Length: 245
Image (tube, rainbow, N blue to C red; front, side):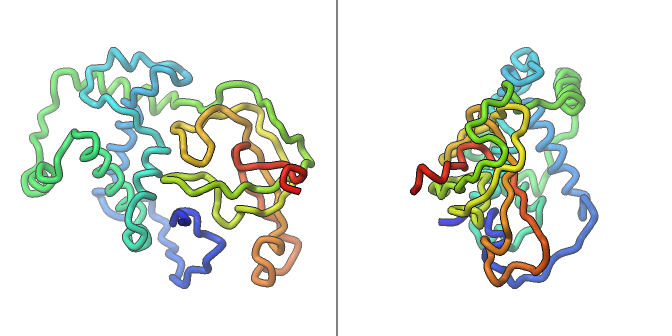
């Protein structure tokens, strides 16, 4: 089954493009963004991230891991019909809400009650320590780079993109599966992904920019002209041509 997040460039979906340029269309979207950022700033993976954070000393009731990967996984796990129907931050809301329910922080009944009667706004005494941690994360972030690059494929290599089984989350565009391209650049580090997916990424590995001829991907549907498609891909998604011959 293809993941709805990576149908772009393949299916020719007939829906008209939305050219909305505002970051936040409605005020509640700002709160969802803030909740997501706070969750990332309090995620327990930060104790082993770069730079390291004293996350074990932060007095928070949030004891799980939450990264961009978790947000994407939650959104992509939605019913495909809902995924295409909902706006960007509505997908975020669905993914975050389901995470809190699955992890036992809230029940669906408690969420429904909060809609009718919001929780008290009084901050607990330790809130300043939580705020300091989130602000530190906003300023410093956390890097996925773990080492210098150890690439299998030098620049100029011809590679075939793997067709690994789709899992709950992937960073491999569906329209590139099985296609052939040329390594145009190798990034300087080995980079981890913040969660292990079922299609091969998670542990530190090189990332490449691979060059493709659009005509070989979309055939007669490709636009005319001297155009080139570039994709940033984890090494797990690349295979040497001779390996499949």
